[in-house]
Image (tube, rainbow, N blue to C red; front, side, top):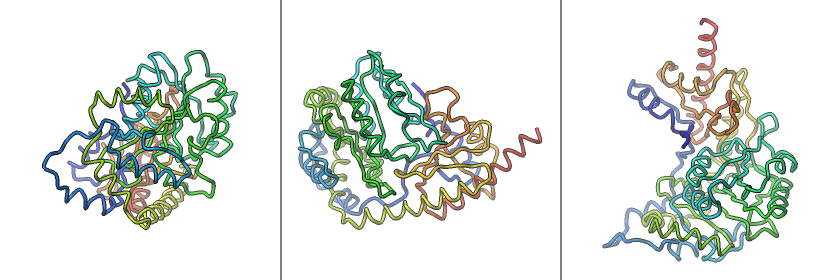
Length: 391
């Protein structure tokens, strides 16, 4: 079971705070935007005498609301197509456990969300990475590169769109390329689409559920964590038109009894929030993205492509080892009483040595904090590389 690159340095951050330092958390996708008022209000006024189990597949009233939500994105579902999960993480895990046998292989473009690797380990599955690079903006390689990895144990392709950790948004051509592979080799397509609200280009959002001819192969993963800034209520969803897949998933759902009761109540109420909320959040992230990417690319030796979705970027730093640098920032450095915490990008790769000089940065802090964090990063890089020279 791999350590999380997002949280593995957390004890160092705690120690830095105990020494009195301020720490800018750029390591984790925990938005600081406010949760919808409608969700907070219903939480404060829950009037129940018993906090009971919910149905294993989640409340029908919530799933009916989700049907209407997805219809806005031209995704046609019924409540029975949707299973409510304990966060998007459980949806990924249950998808793996239901569709894969031990020893089966999943093709995943790297860098990828690090916990996919942990879920694959839990299911006894093996990840086969297909490389994307920062110099090519993390775009998908040609079909031939995929086909080089496909063998008799290959069962699925997994994508995250828009992508965590890179912020890359797959084009229609790339989605059609994936569709054709899935159809040709009869694979599952696991599609993590929790960041669909955060797309910063005029290109259309192409869901795996929009791809014709592979409706029975698609398993869509979703969550309210980022959509409504509700990471802590742990409400996600697994969506599939494939009745056999859903039946297998339900066995795991019944074994864990039910998704969170209070979380579903909050998530369902949050769907009534006026559209102004989503517009406000979107505009905020547009500003944060510009602030961060412009600021990163002004620091000597730093490079970040422009992310077209989500709220992350992978940046290359002028250091020999980004993990050592990230740890050093927390143990040996401060600038005017402040330091930064980032996620070493090597933990988002499975290829040994890949991403060694890269970090993932989440632009989930307000603009003023991002500007200050960029100043601290620039000073940290100067101090770190001067230390290397003096040694």
